[in-house]
Image (cartoon, rainbow, N blue to C red; front, side, top):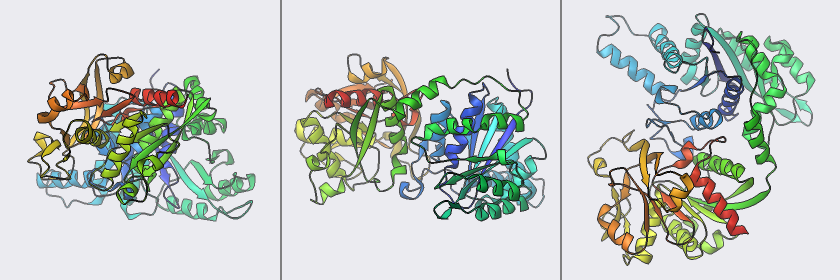
Length: 534
């Protein structure tokens, strides 16, 4: 049964970044979803970029891509993986989008000659945006994660909008905080108290406080936070270290979080259904088998750059009742002569070559692909990984010794990877690649077709280079299997080795993988790795 009036939850960070607001937001949303409520998550990011497509993964982590092509914060991957839903660009609010909208309206005379200000014009824009998302998506509860921490200049105007919004709609504020310990067993609550006073000075009163800490939250610490932050002790929750992020909804549920959320939002109690979720979490926590997979990339120092791949392996592992360990391989070590592919892949049952840009480490990636192909080690190439696999095959199996991508070598005699035609005239850097979900036709009898179990699929993309159609004939004649193309046949989407489990996809199937609906290629890849270990 749907609610008569829409409710709103705002999750605020305090003290420091990196506490896991996205995971907390997704967990709260999951608990409410388990009660049969329709949830719409929104993330506000204060940066003035319109989206995070031009941001360096070293600084910002993975760029997550939605079906409609929106390049957004990696927290949207967490939302989709927890809720098993597809979000749209409207769910992502950035400072850049807000200011662009306001300036465009002002240039068109939209404010009737008034002086345009943060309050009320920008704050009204924010409130209107939040309400519109709830209306368009017909949601029962809209949950808004505010990026950054309270006190940041970048999100101050957004918090003011939420303060105003709470006077117009039913809004529940939740504060995520960190409780440090200077010595064993002595938790310090004073930083949380000060952060809470700062929030209250903005006219916002959190009704629930969630605590991260290095040690279990003591009763004394809970009572201090309760007393000085004006919330009942039962409204102070422990967000402890756990084996897997997917366990957090259950941890919060045991502390009666769902019951409190429904009470605060004035929603009648509903029957819970998290049986499938709990079963999958149990498979993650207690796997029957174990394998190791190498991920070869250029951002291995920042694991958040590959967070969707990591989680897709968790999902595929749970589907196969297995734990997938990851060995991070920095392929520039091969280029520098510090190690060989054989040495770096030692102890691994399979290899993934992920997406990326630029020339650093590409020789090492191709060396790893060649080793995997010759030794029949399962290989999964994602986007740039497919392109590297095509170049490796062209050089070593199709007689094109100096084959390359024009991204790295514009003068190669065999440009087996080249610009997409529509990308040639593009000058801007933002939101101009082949983005979002695109259809693909799979060839029957191929590994990809067997993995998906269907001929027509749709996966998300983020690239501007493709397999050059001028060389598709020669690549096919030499044995490379073209197992998937765009519906019109003009773009190579999936390639396979004729022997062993070796698949490359121009898409990023990891972006649509969820715990309750794992990516088919990852599931089959993990199965192949398990078979190899046998």
